[in-house]
Length: 149
Image (cartoon, rainbow, N blue to C red):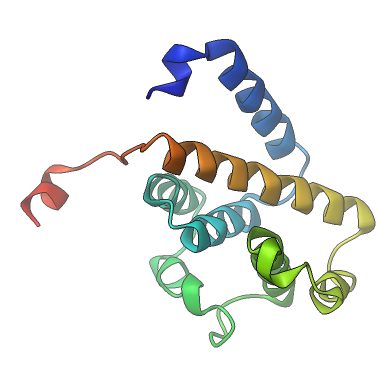
């Protein structure tokens, strides 16, 4: 189903909300890492494709994108990014993690309370988009090179 065609007013509400959350001021590199990681955890190929491209457009390196799934073992991520990625995993997998106090506490040295609210909203938005893309069987664009594979 193409949700955009079937219910444009409803989907436009989500688009508008997403744009407003984007405009709240967290740095683009952090936003894209969080979106990619949440999409990896949810298995959303459509969103992984979109946000790895967006991350590259914002200057993210291939190496950091490739190693994102192993962020805990890699020295390539800042303490701020690590705290955000831990919170992303805790909230994306909330039925399993129950958002541990340790993950919340890890945010405090690196984010203001206002930023924690913004980050939490952003994590909620990407999780909603993942559910749209997965639920409605969205397929990422296929390039000539990937068609040959």
